Image 1 (cartoon, helix red, strand yellow):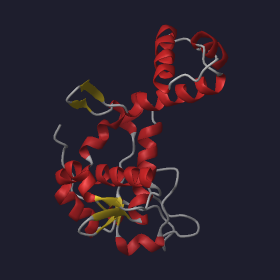
Image 2 (cartoon, one colour):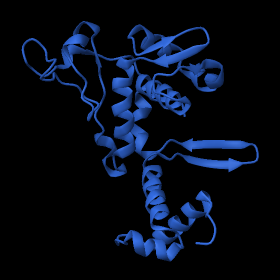
Image 3 (cartoon, helix red, strand yellow):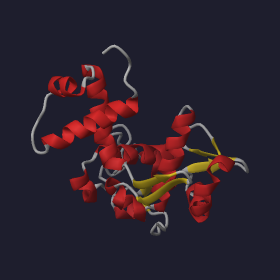
Length: 216
């Protein structure tokens, strides 16, 4: 192409083209030729469309701002997990700033954090987050739950969204005897750090932070 295509234009071209191939497979090369995009651009933005299809909310955009009508279909289970919602939110925005364990400024996120005032206290008591008067950050313990859960929601197809495993919080007394799995939001004892009896953790080994439905 003679000039660089704007990302918004590239994504819209791909979306329009793909709408006419429902149920059919189309090669990346063929899609690139149809849309006038390079192979690399086509590959990158179709992967982006796939992720957005899983997590994108239903929104209306106007001159006054953006109204969210419904969270992404793939995140339906997350509506009942206020502790996990908040942990993922902090992890996500810390990552945007730099590293996942960076602090975020409370003032910049007050419109969201104000809805989670009781949950913030619960997560702090359970050592998932650390707070000062002005900042908040996720701990390694909280990140080991929020990170896999975020990946699970991001990478699970919508048809399977109801099967996303529930994430449970391990008791602090058991923390040093177990290692969280990087590939799953559910934890079991590992070879290098399993429980004394060499068993999988049962429900009695975990405690849940109180949850409540999110107000839409």
